[in-house]
Image (cartoon, rainbow, N blue to C red; front, side, top):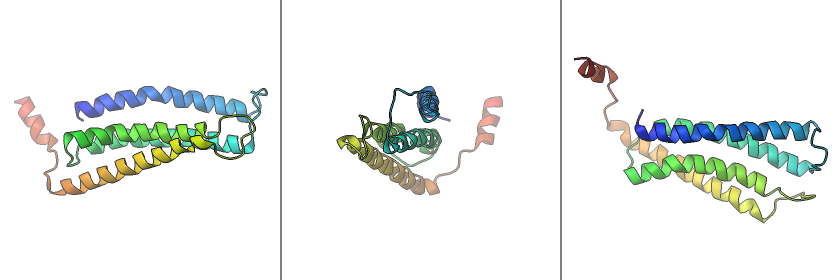
Length: 153
């Protein structure tokens, strides 16, 4: 694992408690413990979707860091992909939340653009990483056993 993957992985893992807290808060709202917070069915659905996408996209962000190590991408593009995955997690989930904030909201607000921006960032990151991995198919695999022998001698 490269230093870059460790760095990004550490940063991404630090964000997980925010997702945990969001799940706790959502559970309280849906269980009726936050009576002062009157949400519409639309808002509850958007908040559920935001929370679910945050969790899934953060896991994808972690996995992507490892794949970037093996992709044939220029350094600048590799960094854009490394940052693009967690940025997409923030934008997509944030877009769900932002577009449903307010009183008696039954349809997305103008802030839905945040969600669409996240979709574009995610699609760009996924396609770039996929192409980088396909371009690297002729590169030799990382031979850990040879590195261990060199390190032990």
